[in-house]
Image (cartoon, rainbow, N blue to C red; front, top):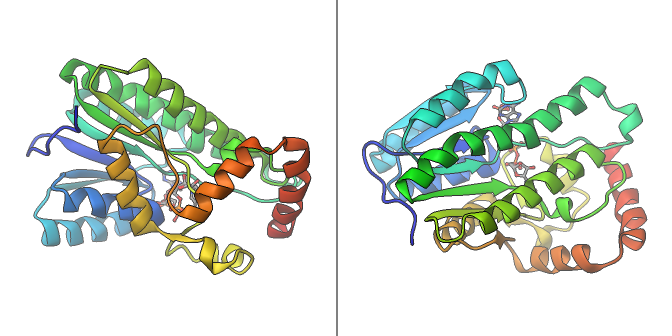
Length: 264
Ligand SMILES: NC(=O)c1ccc[n+]([C@@H]2O[C@H](COP(=O)([O-])OP(=O)(O)OC[C@H]3O[C@@H](n4cnc5c(N)ncnc54)[C@H](OP(=O)(O)O)[C@@H]3O)[C@@H](O)[C@H]2O)c1
């Protein structure tokens, strides 16, 4: 089975579409003819991207400016998606903090859990019944290679990405033969337009990075083929395998000291 063909009625949803990988996923899907619902907090950026995509690809693009870390704010979106013909859901919005958990703002750490994990669960549960009824659909979940590891000084992020990695790969197994595809995007470093990345960029060698456009293209290709996991870039693939199979008592202090520098 392949992904649903784009129609004037159905939609591909991309969360975190106002920058980075989400913007690239939206562009990739529009280039394949999908009309879209773009979600993030910065509605002005979403509207600009929507206009570009409509002009370039002739698709319909709707914008939902929503704080996904706020349960009350995201409830109307959850209800809306449950009632619409959603061909593809890209659960992509996510943020990270660096540093010792005890030194970070507890309210913000809780918001990260809501955004990176609980909202992903909510939106997935919203679209799943409709996809099962139609025997077709695709759910891409952006986790992270970090979700395979223990990383001191990145605890909340790593824990939420372990959740998304596990959710995606487990759910995929349940949906075998239903026509609904589920793919985990578990990238290493992906270069984006986000200025917050500049500090991190300086600490990671250039050859390790992949572009957001490459990550997006490989992700939608992988989702079309119902691949379990996509890790864009050869170096990232190697790092992902090493991170998964090297004992955590060895990797945790090594990687943790690197993330401590990022926290400072
Ligand atoms: N780039 C990498 O190296 C890398 C590596 C591994 C995994 N990832 C994962 O890839 C995903 C995208 O990352 P990125 O690098 O593209 O980051 P990014 O450029 O910072 O984009 C994050 C997106 O999430 C949205 N977002 C943040 N908080 C939100 C909230 N409370 N409610 C709704 N939307 C919110 C942002 O939009 P607004 O600010 O407008 O709300 C933005 O569109 C994340 O899940 C990240 O963990 C990235």
